[in-house]
Image (cartoon, rainbow, N blue to C red; front, side, top):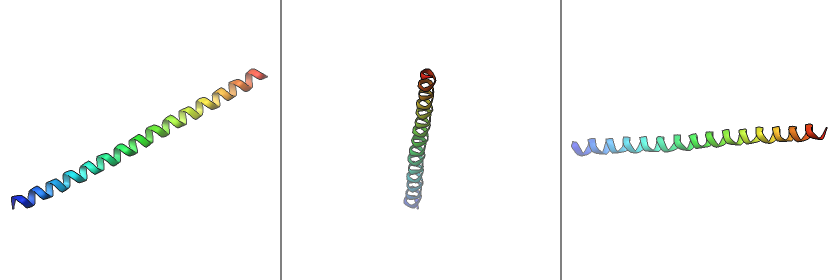
Length: 55
């Protein structure tokens, strides 16, 4: 009986670890997407400054 309980708890623990790894990956993607968006905004602002300074 104890063996069955240990197996079940190990499986639950593994599932929890998988879920945490998956959420970490998604969190990393969200952070990288935010950085990309901020970089795009900066590039657009620099282009606008360059165009304004030429006029």
